[in-house]
Length: 90
Image 1 (cartoon, rainbow, N blue to C red):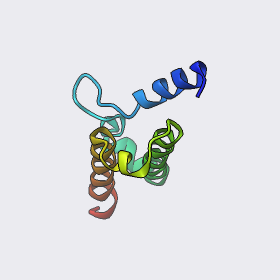
Image 2: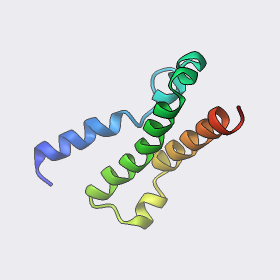
Image 3: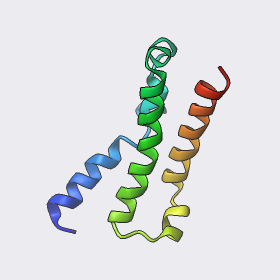
Image 4: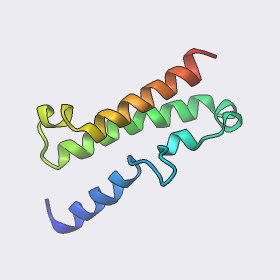
């Protein structure tokens, strides 16, 4: 991977980290905004999990490394619980 690609991947990965308040980007969506565009938000959150996995794979991580990556596991777990709570329980 060249230097530019490495820097872009690092910038892309920033969106998968919690903010200063300890929340992922999707946890900042208000209930009202989520309800207005439930399908769009759900799709975006779901796609973000796959995108994060793809970034990790492009960095040369094998599946076993990704499965042990606590940041990735925390992200997909939080995103999954968020979607279950917002979509399936309402």
